[in-house]
Length: 371
Image (cartoon, rainbow, N blue to C red):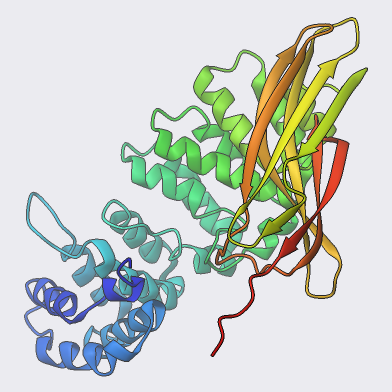
């Protein structure tokens, strides 16, 4: 079994934090911080542990944020000297998120200094929520920073729907203010940064599909292989949903004169096993066709209705009269993000976003073990 995430914050780490802060603040009450930050720690989950340590920082750092910020900044690693780093900085993020927005420029500057040692993407969001225009004016300047972590913070921290983080409703409603940031970082030399840009655009596409499809179209001509990958990764939600402009951006026009067969090798699947199927597509037209082949599993929900989930399959080019066969196994086993129910499910084949064939299959749940 993997180590529980909560164990990333533990008593020894708290002790190290105390030593590293005390080395830059002679009046810091090392023992009190450790006592407060470890009281009941083992019974808590990860974010609760972080909040407990944050509260210990509230109690032991100076009440003046300017003084506290100077201590925390001095406690970061420098010139080979160990300092606050890694998971120690999760509660520090929370401390800055709570106290920093009242000292706007200073708080953002501290997060910028922190991010090379641990992500600060969660810490900057309260600043954006407090005063979006002011925050983005500061963050926009980070796109030219020599540190890749700072550049990535500019794109990752401004994602409208960053997972596990405070949502930014103003940017969900109108993402236009972050598009210049994403454009500036689109050809960043670091894949780490470019991937963040793609994820941010994909976030935006969930609420503004036409905007992102048009953005991709305006940046794809003459794109390098790295930029083309970024734009396609940014379009993944749109491509799964069969958005016409998104498909056209990558050369996938509406399929014509196409024959598609779907064969199930097992129309009844025991939960924990897999659905085996075969797809055969034939280009019956007179022109070659570029085809993106996906499939959707329509899962049974608790109320008996069906909910589709699209899975990527294969992109191919078919000459006139040419056929192509694809075999797949789709596992139906326990996962944390879905609860399965028995009954009649459906699999549908999507070619360039359009459903071209489908069949039903039955998911059977194993009998419970006798008591």
